[in-house]
Length: 362
Image (tube, rainbow, N blue to C red; front, side, top):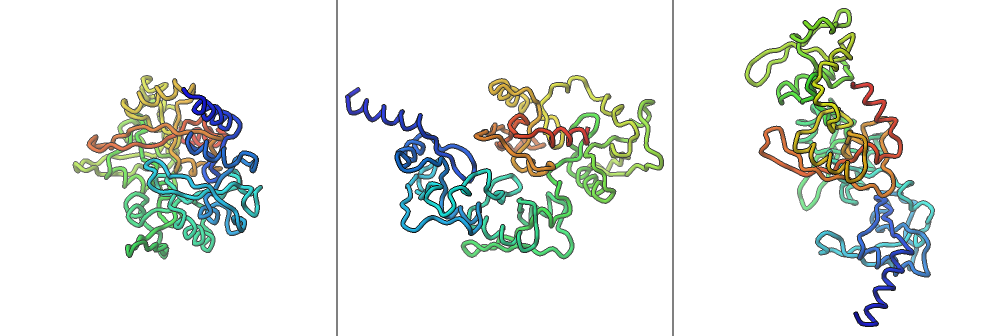
């Protein structure tokens, strides 16, 4: 290694060790190359670690924070393909430096999968939400509203977003029939979700009756001596896709729900589960999650997606610089696979909302 190369490397290491650049939108750090560029730009000029793109300011901090006139930004290529270049400004280059902080940023407007919408869409959806008083940060397409969230409430109007001549009709989760549509109706005995026809019927019944539990038990299990119903409770009859009708009880109708849950197989103990639905992940997913938990030192076996964080009361907040675990999931048919980012319960600032939720559905 030549002397000049050595000097450059030493300067790079000094800069990276002395300064960590943080995205004001997500609270996450930049990749190493971007870190070096931003650290070099900040050296002797800025002490704030937060950087932001000017087009993100309205979506994150309203119209209060703006970039100062004459401020010179830093050009950064956008990963993963680096085909686009964006300009970033340090918090100290804005009119309100103390406001440019991930902890003070407004909630990102997200899709049903928890992915943030483009910044220009963020601003428009936030404006509509303020006008109509929506508190939920999640917006979904009309198709999702109809097929995954039980349909649209009577009289609700969509927000129509037009891009390149194509219209997209969008609804806030507060405008749909089943805002908890991401949660599945499951067997209280196996923890497995029911097939689609039964799933849809039980979702509708749960909504109509006001049940809080997602767990159900069939009538034949009521013969167990340890299980008893609350006074006056009636079963509901649901027909599956094979034309077979069965009678179901929601766990809210059972007097001693603990007796139902005690019937579950002891093999399920220690299994990794979804923290919102308590559903047990499949065998393939179990291997991935157990490996990730072991590598990161997590003791909790409960996980959740970014979207599900918002369904807890109050909504969950991740600890600083927490990274998700990417797990490859299979749909019920087993033919379609997709990767999903999920988080362990130990990655949140306060676990109490999770503990209360699990107690209510167990």
